[in-house]
Image (cartoon, rainbow, N blue to C red):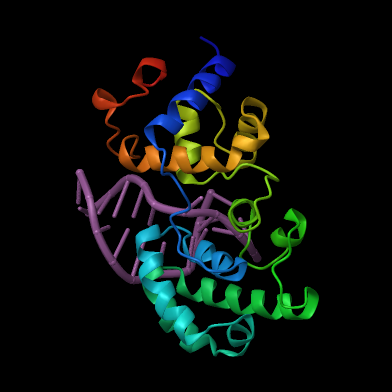
Length: 208
DNA sequence: CTCCCGATAT
DNA sequence: ATATCAGGAG
């Protein structure tokens, strides 16, 4: 069974296994999703979802992020880690949105990637989940790991993994696919202790 | 390549 | 003690 056949098989199996897969980050607007996704770098979604309700209660708008002090924002997001960089980037992001985009989150990949603290992965999350635009495939730590274990890509570079996935899966499946793979990565194919013995994908996994 | 960094599981 | 968590920038 080759790579393309494996991808097709997964596309049939994954929705049966994870029918309720969805964006695990809590958000009510494109801006809130941008903030939550920046905070999610090297941090669990569970932790981000403890921080953001308090954060958005104190800072309910892009304008309030542009006006808050570095020190106060750092204390609000401290438990997510990398709090100095994240606070600096989110404040600069808010200023850039107000200056260049009328305070709205842009819907173009290149515009999103130009924002401080927003890279390709975060940009793809926002486009797919806030706007329903499938510009590319999200490749985070889970999807990179599963793509290699499942034999969908031999690369470590997230951009090369994304290029492989885009060739293997139809565009309208990209957003759901990212949620299915992340769900499987959390529940079964964990980084440290993959549960191959009980894995429902093991029959088609070259790493099992 | 290194640095940023707290919380949690192993 | 150490690896890992919806990464990005210098």
